[in-house]
Length: 432
Ligand SMILES: Cc1ncc(COP(=O)(O)O)c(C=O)c1O
Image (cartoon, rainbow, N blue to C red; front, side, top):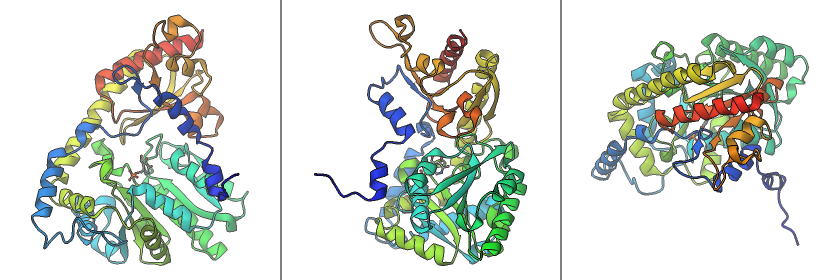
């Protein structure tokens, strides 16, 4: 006898490439010995533990301002939090958004981080083609593919998605089949910051396509990492919402990277239209917006603590990035063709000259200690192993075979020196 599964469930029975990879590793991961530079965890030290505790106490002590904080909340989110997000944007001139920009839009809070909002978008949009940059945010593209969407990934350069290539590719597809644009403004995995010029062009292209097809094609900007652009010269970005003429642009943010992922606060700034209504209903269906107490804590933190937090977090990541760059020049310069990263978020995306990084490659086998040579793998127990995200998970371009993503969110600098030395050994082994 078998379950009568939906198509989505049938596809969900097959673990994604990344889940397979991490499951194999997680099974016998040794804390303090193996190094995980694959996960997108933030640095534990950046989480404002004391401020969260203070926020909780103050919220409970003020039931007038923070009503029913331990009860159910509404589907569009806590009014306090939505107000604090708006104040945060205006105070720091985020995205150059103004009071008028907010007056004609809504802020909605997701059920469980930005992830749940992205998931809801994949529920409410008719499956079709999703346009994104290459390399792509593999977690979401996999979700989309399981739900029947097709990914059109357009290569990026140092300014983000290459709009000239996009224009060419658009000639090869039926525009009626485009479902939406999914554009990560500080790209994961590459951390390339999308330039204002490119944002504007993408919105213009989407507007033209909407007119041509007579259907509103959403442009979803995912700005998950914009709060942690830690190179001070690059911090001032302009929101894609600024270029929206026909109410098709939305922007998704998260407090995961700047406050704490466990708060699970993701939000969307959206025109007050049918897309907002459908999203609100999806959020309601899956358990209302995030836990009200977490929303109120986040509101309090934005009101009282964000300045200190922003400075601490960004300073920490900037220092780490500088240290890792030094390690790259010291140990890996012979092997690396180029890399991106070190200005924003906490990833480096490396392209090697001629070392393959995928599952089954010599480099991968060395770092997973599965070469079959006990000198390398370890005799009694496995030597230290290193996990990273191979480029082939984030791109189908041929050069992805030579690429990988390293995360510097979680681990401490000392671990990085060890990790990069291990990578240099793996490179040497791969070249033999
Ligand atoms: C590009 C991107 N979008 C969204 C998210 C998810 O954020 P949240 O923690 O709010 O679900 C991540 C998390 O790593 C991300 O990298």
